[in-house]
Length: 335
Image (cartoon, rainbow, N blue to C red):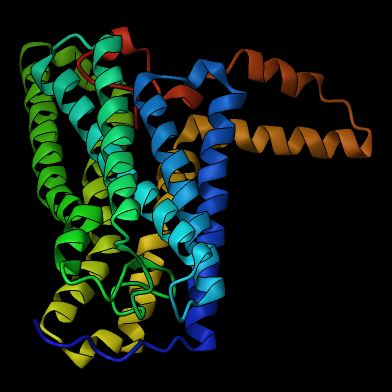
């Protein structure tokens, strides 16, 4: 195996960009968790899975923030701790991302009933497998300083480990590459199924073509089904590129632009999920804005009874993004 490249130096601008991404992702994941806690009526099963994904992304962003802030230059106790936390949370994020896609595929395409058993399986796999891998890596002293050639300031697989490539695969890369393949396939199958269902409904029940609430929601859902795997790949591909360049012992791995893209891509998953499932989801966005306006009205002493009433009885147009599951099966209100 070729000798490792010299350490990648992080400049102030690169560190600032990645730290900002960590902060925004943490805020986005926190907002997703907050909306789930504040509004019980929006707690669907897909959004429950999104909650667990947000928790993994939040822990990942916080651990990366500490790593970039410290910019480790050797293996230390806090380097190992940060590397272990980021390894666990990052790998868990991959599993929960695939769990959301698998859940949507099973319920929409297969039409299979999904009880608590499937959720328990998701918990066992998405938390248990990353935890087992992380414990094994720490116990075998595989987590440590990696010279930022496969990271951006944080610690991951120890540069001195002889079998470091194997552990790079086990602690993230193999699951990342698996997600590159699994997510597009599952979401393409889901989208094809939805399109066929719409075509059949319009053919045999033409009256549905005049329904004003169905078309905007399905259009939004279709766009999100496309964006989920696309955004995931756009964010994550840069770390895979640097991993391959490291295996080839190429000095291009230290390119500043590639380093920044890697840092932002690995840390901004929570922010991207927040944009798609909070800011770009009408009912959640409307409730969030309503809460902000109510807080402002309280501060200035304005009456807000009417706004409270509107929250208790939301306008039908406001709920287009989350229709009744029984009315829209096999379509789900997840998007």
